[in-house]
Every structure is written in C-alpha cells, then in structure tokens.
Image 1 (tube, rainbow, N blue to C red):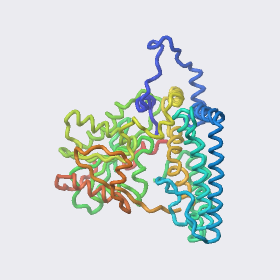
Image 2 (cartoon, helix red, strand yellow; image 1 turned 45 degrees about the vertical axis):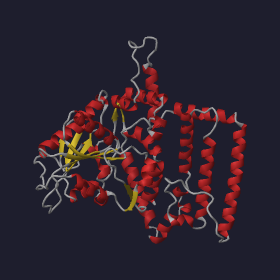
Image 3 (cartoon, one colour; image 1 turned 180 degrees about the vertical axis):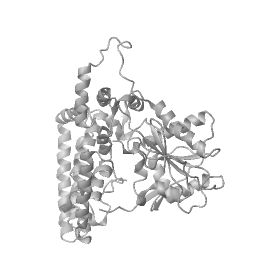
Image 4 (cartoon, rainbow, N blue to C red; image 1 turned 180 degrees about the horizontal axis):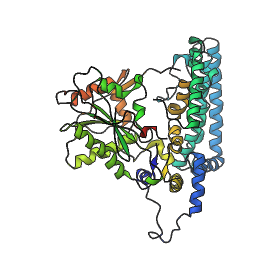
Length: 477
C-alpha cells in the first residue's frame, strides 16, 4: 500500500519544507538536488544513507577516543569466552551446566526445548553472548547522541539477526527435526513457496488469497452471513486495517481468517479495503482519509443497519485513524460507536519507539524529496523500514517457517480496567494481567457479547448488484 505525500508529513509531526515566501533567508532545495535524492531513495527503499552514515561516524569517532571503553570491551569479550568454554566443556561431558546467558523476555527465538540439546545449546549460547557484547559495544559511549546510539545499536541487531543460527539449516534443530519427521517434505514445500514468492515478486502478482461500496479511497467489503445462521448481533462490526497491508492480513485463508471467525460468531462484518494513491493524490491528507475512509464507511453502514451502534476494530495505522474518527464523533456528541478495539495501533506518538530511528530530519527530508518526485511513498519503499523494525518476526521467522514449516504455541494476556482507573505502563500491565493459552479470538468475541446490549436480528443480506469480494483495490500493487 502507498501513502500520499501530505499525509506522511502530518503523521511525522514535521512541518512541510518552508517556502521562499515564508522564509526568504532560507534557500529552498533545488529540483536537481531533490531529483538526485529521489533516485537514491529508489535504490535504498527510502532509507537515508546520510542518516545512517552520520550515526555510525559519530559512534566510531567517539569510540576511537575512548580507550577505557576498549579495555572494558576486551575484558567483557575475554570473560564471555571463558564462560562459554566452561559451559561447552560441562555440557559436552554431560555434566549439569547452567546456561551462561538467558534470552531477553521478548526474544522467542530459542523457546523450543530442542535448543537445549547438544550441540545446539552451544550455538545459541554463543550467539546470545555475542549479541550481548555488541550491545555493550554500541551503547554507553560518552559523547554519542542518544539518537545516533540507538541507530547504531539497531543496525548491529539487524546484522546479528541476519547471522542468527535460526537462519541456517545445520544450526537450527527445529528445522532438522522437521526434516527427519517429514522425510524432507518440509524442504520441498519450502522450495515451492520460495519459487512462488520469487515469481510473484518478479511479475508483480498479488499474494494468494462480500461485496463493495467504493469511492476514490476505499472499497467497503460486506461479508455475507454464515450459512445456516438464524440471527446475528444487532451491532455490525467495522474493521479498519492498516494502509500498507490492506485488508487481507485479517482474512488470509479459512484457517486463520479473523473475518471468517467473526462471521461464524454471528457478526455482520464490514472491512475497509484501501486504494493505493498515485501521483495524482499527492495533496491527500489526514482529513481526506478520515472523511472518505472511516466516516464514509460508517455512513454506508448506518444505511445498512439504521439506528444501530457499530463495533469497531482498527489495525496498525488504521487503528490510529479509527481513534481520531471515534474522538471526532465523541466531540460532536454522536453516539454511533458501540466499542473500539485497537490491534497493534498507536494513538500516542510522543514515544514512538524504534520507529523514531527512521524519522530524524535527514530521513524525513530524504523521503520528502522522494515523494516530491513521485507524489507518494509506495509499499516497497516503506517495507524496508517496517521489516527492519521487526526483522525477527517479519523477515527471519517468516523465512524459516515458510521455507523450512510450523507455529509456536500461542498465548495472550487479559486484564480489565474500570472507568476512572489510573494509567499503567505496558510493563506493569503485563505483570498484573492473566496469561491464557490459545487464541485471543474467543475471549474478544465474549467481550463483544457483553457490550452488545440489543437483541439479535435476522441475518443481513448483502445488497444486490455489488461486485464480488475481494474487490479491485486489494489487487493493486
């Protein structure tokens, strides 16, 4: 999915480049410079080389001037080497050997018990010790700005993730066990998946994979009720997905389709499918996406289910837009929204986490030059940054599981907050929340049942004359 030029500036919180009439003492960037930057951005997927180079130069120059830091790093390297050698000796001889280091709480890569078997335990311990040393090497250097430190530490993690033992068949026990269990069928299946992905990438074909109301920004998909369903919830459900992943991330296949599950639970589901902006849409802004996106969808749903409040769910940037829409409706005193669920969505950008590594002045200016040239930021130019932010989940884990097979055990946390309770940060929330095994879908739909106060109604049929799902916008590249 693409993002129009004006909208990125609004989301970044950075003012547009000053015009000559506003600041006559500042020379605006020349078209030649902007064109050269745009061409460079095409080759780097929108990531500014200057921003990365400045951060690494700052880190390297300050490190070269810190001999005490060298000494500490050498001492840590020697200590870690001795600890690992002692662990390797004990483990090889079959003696009890407590691990040298434990993975971070959020690191799920080595949770499988197979990683505790020899010799895989030696490999994962060496990797974790090396990862910890590089964290020490890229942080805590006097004089390096916090932003540059974070960029360098982030870059080091990406290189380490690339070299992770998970990504090599010979050092990944989960892959080896699957190959034995399936007599190599997982490797054949992975090769087929890889060939299919390469073909789709080269030809521009969409990923594999209701009816639509359409305007120039969205198609609104309405899913037909489940077969044999005698009644449905009175409150319909609107899902607002991310702009860059379109709607199908929540409706990939029957086995993992949130939409199919909701329909089966008696919900009338509507899904926004975003249209890719092109060069003609360079002036689109957040107001346009609010008016012709969420508000337009709610207006159509109001006609299908008059007098009923709407349950809503927003994913990623779609959740951010949904939050703005719900706040706007609340300010106008319109009681249209029955509930709002946010999935991996951010409403407070004062602390945007590692996303801020890609939103310094150099990076935003680089992207603005790219969008000046083409009028929008396309999916391939955004994919690099998003994949880097979650490389373990979006690159390496996907590659291992898709090309080499299986899913880890799923679990989720729940906690209730009473109206008026004080805010608690995510870490404290997890401490007080209850952990549950399995999918969160049943718990969510049970909660939706508690906030749905109207009696159930007959199934709503899809309007005649509308085109079949998934519509045409979802097929755009």
